[in-house]
Length: 194
Image (cartoon, rainbow, N blue to C red):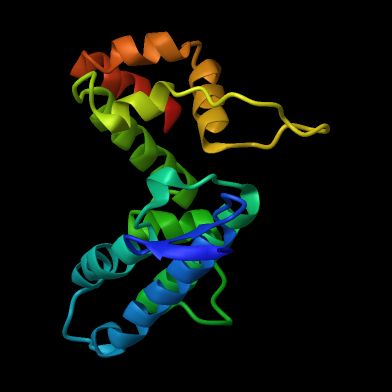
């Protein structure tokens, strides 16, 4: 089987996220289009519109993002979609031109890559705090055996997690120790996702 849908996420043979991200954007766009009457309504405040956007559109867009192998291309696609929605909600049309940073400031948003990273690390700590005998916890330490194909190693979700931790000077064992202390964990995630 080339691909299948499991719990709303598209799982492909190669383990990539490209098709799942495309499907998420499509579903989020459908949710956004259904809410056009809200976006056009002048009686609804901008603050309320942004709250509706976060709860009804962005929740659909980022569903399952904790397990995505994030690349610059997928992040860019997601950010373009969010920016387009925010411009429509805030009623910013050409010839008015503002930078993306100004758009995010007006909408009180942060970059999508930071949001995905924060969601991923929140999911990791949730998993690490489970009992030792749970399957989710065992998978975090699982080391598949076998030989890699020749060539450059593929960037995997697990490697991205290890690399992000190493950038903050933490090994995987240190990350597992940090998960036990909520205050130190919050500091660690805040340093990872400024």
